[in-house]
Amino acid sequence: MANIKTKVILVGIGGVSCSGKTTLAKHLKNILPNSVVVHQDDFYLPEEMLPTHQGLNTKNWDSPSSIDWVQMVKVLQDVKCTGSIPSDHVSGHDTEDIPIDDNRAVVWRARFEDLERDCLVAANVKLIWVLVEGFKLYWNQDVIRQLDMRIFLRLPEYILKERREMRDGPLGQATWIDPEGYWDDICYPEYIETHKNLFENGDVEHGAPRDSEDWVTGLLLIEPEVKEKKVDTRDIVEVCLEKIASYSTVAAVSDRMGY
Image 1 (cartoon, helix red, strand yellow):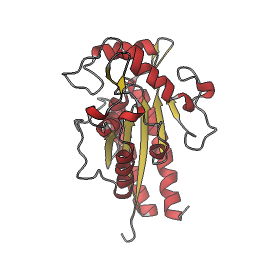
Image 2 (tube, helix red, strand yellow; image 1 turned 135 degrees about the vertical axis):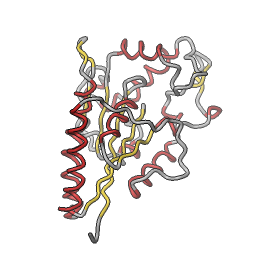
Image 3 (cartoon, rainbow, N blue to C red; image 1 turned 180 degrees about the vertical axis):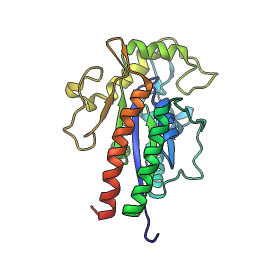
Image 4 (cartoon, rainbow, N blue to C red; image 1 turned 135 degrees about the horizontal axis):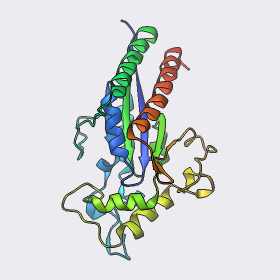
């Protein structure tokens, strides 16, 4: 088949530490054909370059200035052009998929395989999905503009804090233990401060997503736990997949037509 075009779709998955971003990305990767994951954690600056929180006298891993934004933008641009992660990009995350042991996953996988095939046959477009997950994903506008779709996970603070206390640390390293007060004085306040622009009235915990800025329009807000009612992981994955499927179909046709 001649003149096959490649359409790379970047799906952003944002949220505070312990909101389930990485897990969701891996669930989606297990279903989406031709998909890869980019982790924002891989763009931390060297520890000696991180800002220091004077009150706790510890490095602030949750400040926007802890990320090498220039390098992250460059990698995302490369991925969008080629559909693959640059060979010199080193990731500290494992590449293991997290499958959903359910017949629905089989159905979804088949649906995306059909979508991929239909786009190739009808529009000469090969689809590739790139899942970009990160705790400050929607802070830097240059990064945001690389994303075709934007998903945001929001959970109550007390649940996030419980999860944080059960894990090794912000980088998933066994040698890391949160300094006393890190969550209360650094991690959660940084999350609130750096996400105010996404929500109406700056209400990160309860506000609706703002649609007044082009670069945040269409944010898909996922709230796994609201008023003590937990949403099943499979349902969350399906909501995201439905959105991805709808966008991908339109994007492939538009790309073919030159829109």
